[in-house]
Amino acid sequence: MLQTVILAVLLVTGSSWVPSVGRPAAFPRSSSLFSAPPTADPFQAPLSADDYIACGLAQCFRMVDGKLRDAFIYEPLTAGSLETIEKQVETSYKAVLALSASDFFVGDPNTATEINMANIECLKEVTGIADVEMCSNAVERAQCASRTFRRRLEAKTLAIGEMSDDYNFSTEKKRILDEVKVVSFDDNVKQDSSIDVYGRTDDEEAAAAEIEKLANA
Ligand SMILES: *[C@@H]1O[C@H](CO)[C@@H](O)[C@H](O)[C@H]1NC(C)=O
Image (tube, rainbow, N blue to C red):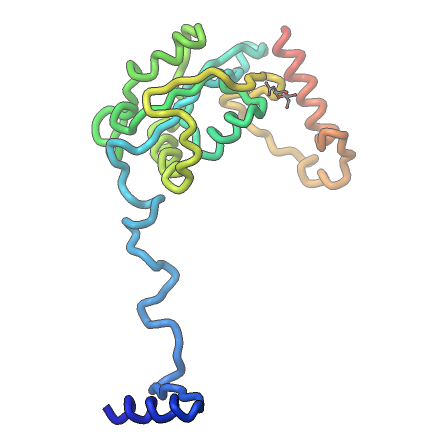
């Protein structure tokens, strides 16, 4: 009450008045690195039945008996990937289907161990590809990829249940499955390598040429 009276007086006289506090004004004690409980973080909150899943069908390759063979895979897409292919950037994706988490996973999306293959079969029909395998770690990847759409609603370019093959499909840059990277001494001296106009080193260029040769074998 006394303070209120003093403040009123000082305001009238035009002087500035600084409230006195016991210690310097700082962030409240409760303010820490995490401003919200973990469940409020879009990347932590459990998946719900209507979380968004974008499942793509990609053309990859696999080395079989020294020859490069087609290998088609189903693969969950992140928001960034879906936005990228929607911009007609060349990718290995032939078609994409959007569906809800409850339609993609068998059972609770958070504890699922299986994917409901029957619900993504339509990707085979639209692309005319008979033999498609599921990518590795599909459940975990889909759970993570789904969460990326929570903060990028504009990436949901397909409505749930919608499918599109209106993308810029290309296999110019071949994705090879199950490839084992052998680290060589050359990796230590990459900075000495020359780089071509595509930003590729001599080694990568040679590898790309070799992949082309094997693909046509
Ligand atoms: C597909 O990508 C290539 C390479 O970036 C580009 O030249 C071409 O215009 C794209 N096609 C469409 C339909 O946008």
